[in-house]
Image 1 (cartoon, rainbow, N blue to C red):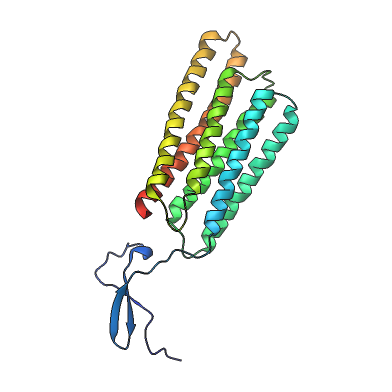
Image 2 (cartoon, one colour):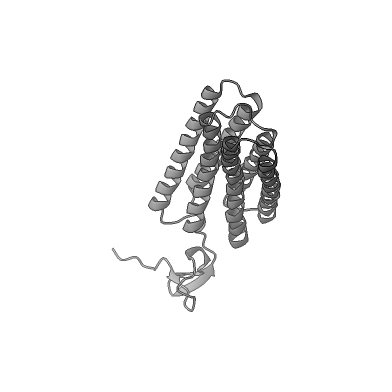
Length: 243
């Protein structure tokens, strides 16, 4: 059956690469056209929920790492918990990517969604690697620098969770940018601690094996903090493009 009116026609004169949610639409009925604002923001909040789950998982695994380095008791059991959380992070990433491939309309650019999912996954991967190396290398008691880095990881993931929670149908640009700035500040703190930790290894360590072990562990911990900054960079772009 032929409809008595066309649903919409796309405005002419726009570049071919114009995103769908930026295209003004004309509603035609009985020969009359009215320009109106049309939102393609999906009603279902699947991505929002999945990203919040992934960010919360990063917070949980960060706290487990901190508990590990501060108490250094039941280390095998604690590593098992961290490993399970890392697997949960992998599962969340797979869900996000599967949803991305199924969705015709997305809340923001597909590239940004994929990069955000990947960066959240990397946070948990690097935390797991740091914990795994501590047990695998039989390092003994964690260093004070490892504790400092663990503290920064906890703070960074907490800010990431708050920032991710700002991704919804009405993004608050200023609030999201403020969260991103704080994550960047924490990354600078983490970089300073990492550099000091490596310098101490070369100046104070008399055993090459000890130096190699802790340098690798420090790198994993610093990479976890860097991944939080990667998340902030993606969210900053989202804020500037869509808020």
